Each structure stands twice: as C-alpha cells, then as structure tokens.
Image (cartoon, rainbow, N blue to C red; front, side, top):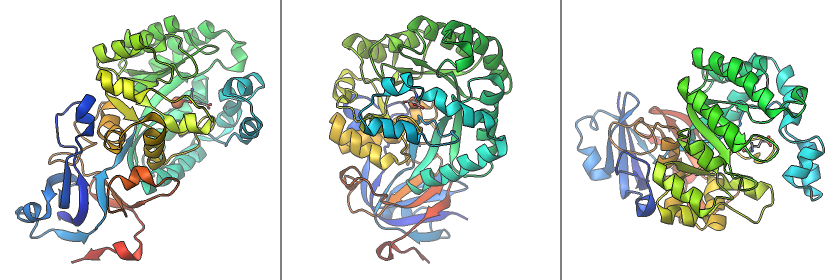
Length: 425
Ligand code: NIG
Ligand code: FE
C-alpha cells in the first residue's frame, strides 16, 4: 500500500539536474511549503504541495501519516570510519592536554593504536557493534553512509572488516557502502616501510577485495608520514583498474599534493581539503571532483583552520559534507552537527550545507541518481525534523532535532514529541 506523508511545513526536494550541484545551484533547495510526499513500494511517486500530491490517484487509498515540521532527503554521509572496536580515550586525554594529532601519533597513539583491538575482535561482534552504531545514524536522519575499513591493516583483518560491513547490512536498514582503506597507515610490522606495505596491499588485499566485491571504493591517506602523492596515484590507478572507485584523504594536515595526485587516478571525491591551494581547486573544478568537507573533525581537533568552502563553491567545485565519524579525529555521527560546523566555521549558507549533506553526498558516492533528493522515481529515503524552518537545522546545534527517519518507504526511527504526534487516518 502507498503511504502519504502529509502536513509537512517545509519540504526541501532538491529537484534539479541529475548531477552534483555546484556554485549557485547549491543554494537551490526546491522549497515547498505545506507539502506532502507520496511513496509506493519504497519509491517516491509524488512530492510537492499537499494539494497537488493529494490529487494523485494513489493518494486516495494511501495510508496517511500527518507529520508537521521539516522534511529533507535522508542525509547521505559519504565519509565514515564507523568500524572500530574501541574509543581512543588516551588520545583524547592527550589532546585535552594540548597534544596535536601528529604529536599523539608520535607518542604511539593515532590510527595504528586502533589496530590491535580490531584485529582481536570477532567478525560477528564487529557487525553487531556496527549495526548498533547504524541505529545512531538513523536516529539523526542519516539514511545512507559510506563505511571504510582501515584499522585492520593486514589481509585477514581488512577482509574481516569489509565482511562485517556486509554482515551488518542484514542487521540494520541503514544503507552502507563499503570502502577499502587498507592504505590508511603503515602497520607496525612493516617498520615504516610504506612502499613495501603498499606492495603487499596491491598484490594481495586489493585483488581479493575486488574479486569478492567486498568494497565499492578504495581510499588512501596521502599525508606526510603516511603515503606520498606518487604512491597515491599508482595505488588508486590499480584500484580503479580492478573495478573499485577511487577516493582520497588529501590535504588534511598539510598541502602535500594528494588531491592532484588522486585526480590523476580519477577520484570521485577528494576528502578533507583543509589545505587545498588555488591549483588544487582549479584541478578539482576541471575534473569535476567533489570536495567532501569534514568540518566536525576540525572542530574535534580544536583547529582554527577549516576547509575553504567559499573558495571551492565560488570556483564551481561541488561540495559535499560528511561526518568522518572515527575514533581519532571525529567521534560524532550526527550530520546535524556537521551542518552547524559548516555554516559557523566554513561560511556555508544553510542551503549549501544541506545540499552538501544530501544530494552532493549522494553524488560523492556515485548514487545521486537514486538517493539524495525528494523527486518522483527516487528511493523514498526521508528525514523529518521538529522545526518550523529548515534553517533551524543549522542554527541549533548539539541536539538531535530528527523525529522520524524513513528508509525505502519504511519508518526506521520515530521519536515524536507530543506536538508532532503521528496521526494515522
Ligand atoms: O579522516 N586521516 C585519516 N583518517 C581519519 C583519522 C583516523 C584516526 O585517527 O583514527 C580521518 O581524520
Ligand atoms: Fe577520514
């Protein structure tokens, strides 16, 4: 049976080109007041004014859900490291005492300090932990998330992580797209020999992951002390040859050329972009590469420098926003906080920020033709918020304003305050 979500005060449809949004188009939210969305078999069949949608032939017999508030496409979080066994509380204490990310790494913390517990964790426990975290994403209005490996750093554990993502997919309605991030850091047993480790990944893990279709994307951390731009290009080209879509962590802590190196291998998105120079921005614009900005990680690291969203948008680079949820630089899964950080610290408008967290997030995962906007034919992934105006999503921060999440037409989370009570007719 069809379902009619009606009584929506403000609906943001993001109707527009079936392409990543850039420049002024990032501010075109497709606002409809007093709106409704009609869903059938998990697909949106009509979205727009309440009056127009209720005239649709399927609307008469549909189950009606009165919702009120604001409705958006479910958030698409295009960058997470949601598989990790333990929080890094020792790193956190060091940070509160003033240590930088690099200093924490030098003292034995950082990425490789997450590896031991991940290697010890059984796959089933990992999948259950991920499914429990997925519930947190759904509660905050995220309906799709990319999930990276990268804390296993050997064949057995990287494969285990990706298989755990696959297993967790059966335990949660959150849609998860897996990424192989074996090139996250050099594991201790390689004694800092980055090329030797990359050769090991390229010869063994990469082909195995590609053959088993265990990941959609391959990612690499291009940064001083991790992997070089030359290694980035070669590794991502090989990943692409094997059928994985390349992504990159680049210019996060310094400008070391990772963005352009990754563009040479055809990345779909270049993520972080904190230290991009004009020539990197020009290269992204030229290649159509999406800049996935992760300002919640800058916030958590206590940085004063944030990614230059205004320059990127002015240059016509499509900008996406994601959490970067991970134990080292961003223990936050709430995309609503990312909206606030993007507006407050990167100078993005609420319209641009919400576009970046929905439609452009979807394009950063190559699925913008299926999710990320509320138009007929798209998957019915919706998030409802107990606010009068969509700008309140960026204005209030530190709270979860999401009251209902819908995935493929089904309610997967619901927490209605009395004033937004659901009224089935
Ligand atoms: O995106 N920079 C690389 N990866 C993560 C951090 C991972 C960690 O510290 O555990 C990031 O910030
Ligand atoms: Fe990351």
